[in-house]
View 1 (cartoon, rainbow, N blue to C red):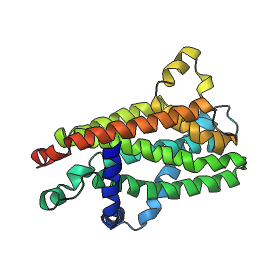
View 2: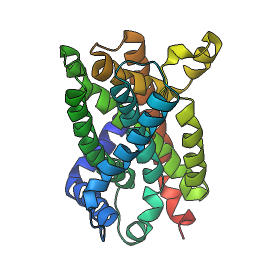
View 3: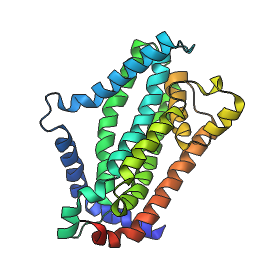
Length: 262
């Protein structure tokens, strides 16, 4: 734990670089685009509207206020999925800097995750607006949302550290991660409530770690209630475990990165 604390102190001393890398990633992502940053909101909105039309009008899920049910789950999912897929390549994408100057390698996945969460902040604002439009309950339970978003951030960072190490050694990792997330999307109760499944399937779904993050956000946003302790404790434990494992693996391998970059 002392080494982790020292590492984050070192990262703090590179705060300006961290911010500049995150801003640079944001600028590069939207450079040459007419709508620029708006695509951060428009892409998920189009996806949401298509899913809402299919599952509420055609398949006809009997879920009250289905749009907010779906959107709250989708925002949680995108926070993790989009962040991890992009941050997986963060070390390799910055190999030109790694070869030239000494920089704590942890700066690269952290700046990539920070950049994505700037995008996600805009998406969450749209979710709040939708809550007003569709008259979702605005209650005191919303005070827990900042903590839940922090858990999303920590979990995403932990997974990104783990996968960034793997990607340095095997460049197929990013594609594999994308396919795994695509499969997990349907194994996570985003489109459907968990209780529509048979009990034995519900038990399988609960082994999916992303389930706990989706549900932790959905409780205050959609149901207007604090998440059950079991959900919140599980999400907290998963986020902490991902960060510690990701950090340990990353630090143990970072000195060898330069031998695998080309």
